[in-house]
Length: 457
Image 1 (cartoon, rainbow, N blue to C red):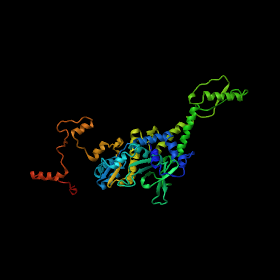
Image 2: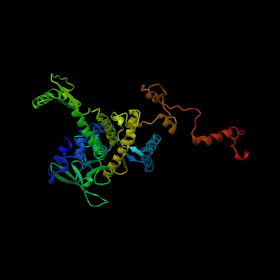
Image 3: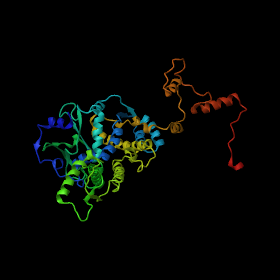
Image 4: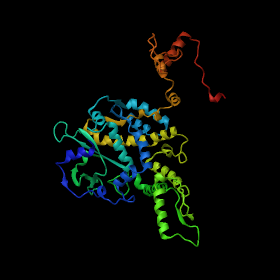
C-alpha cells in the first residue's frame, strides 16, 4: 500500500468537495510554467539526464542513518555544528572531538523507533529517498504526521508520510510574519484541511513565492525543452534511416509521373522507413537521382549538443558531470574526487539542513535536550586522512590486538596483547614539576638550563 492508498483510506470520511487540482489533471503542460506535475513526468520520469543525475544523488544521500543524542555540553555543540559544516578536512576532524564533548548518542528512543519505521509501507531508506527526491527535483518536500488527538501521547506522531507536492498546497494567512494558515490536501478532486503543526514543509528559497520552494528544473526549463526537442529529432532521424533525400527523375525530358512518385513513396515507407529497416539497401531499375535535403544528427551537432545539455542538467541537480558520464565538462580528473565533492559540497549540507528543520518540527514533542542529525560516518568519502589525524591528535596508543585488526587478523589470546604499551621516556605534563623537583633533591649541584637573554647578545 502506497502513500496515495493510505491517504485515501485515512481521509475518506474527512473529504469535502473542492475544485479539481488544475496542475494535477490539466492536459496542457508546458515547461515554461511552474508545474510540479510536468517536472516529475517530463523531467524525472522522461528525461534520461534528469533521472540519472537525481539517482546519483539519491543513491548516496539516502544511506545515512539517523542519529539521536542527548546534549551534554551546549557550548561544545555550537563548535561541533560549526566545524562539521566545513569543507576543510582538518576542521571536520576537529568536529569529532567536539562531538564527543557535546553529545551522548542514544541507542534507543521512541523518536528513533518512529524515524526508523515511519509507516507501514516504507522503510526508513525509502522514506528518506522520497523526501530527498522531491526536495531535489521540485525544490520542496512535505511530510504529514499522524498523531492521537487525545490522551498521554497527544501530539506524538505514530506515523510519518511523505506527501507528493502535487497533492498538497500551503494556504496563505496573509500575514508576512506567519505566512501559512494551514495546508490543503487534494485527492481525487476533493480536499481536506490539515493543520500546519502536522505538516513538515522543507523548501528551497523562492524569491517570488514564500509559500513554495523553487525547482531547479524550473530554472533550467529552456535547457530541458531544447534537450527534449533534441532527443525527438535524433529518434526521428534514426527511425527514418538517417539523412532525408528527395528522389527525382534523372532525365530532364522524362520526369516522373504522379503515379510513379506515389508508388516510389509507398515502397520507401515499406522498405526503408522505421527502425527495423535501418540501413536497409534497396535497388531500382528506374533512372532516378537522390538530392540531399537534410542533415544527419552528427551534421546538426545534435549529439554534441546533447552531451552539453547533460552536463548542464547534472549541474542543476548539483552533480558533477563526470558522475553521469561526461568527462569533458567535469571539474575533476576522476570519479573518486567527484564523489567526495558530491558528499562534501551537496549531500552533507542537505542532510544537515534536513535534520535541522526536522528537529524543529519533531524534537519538542519527544523531550528536552535532544539533538537529531545524520550519521555521516557511513560515507567512505568523508573518512579522515590518517596523516591529518595524527597531525591534529598525535600518534594514538593501540593494543597489539588493535593493530592486528587493522590487517583484518584475528585477535591473539596471548598474554599482554590487549594491553597498551608506552615509551619509557614519556611522562605526563602534570608531573614535569614533580620530577624536576625530585631531580634537584637527588642532585643538588644540577642547575636548570639557563635561558637565552637578548641583552647578552
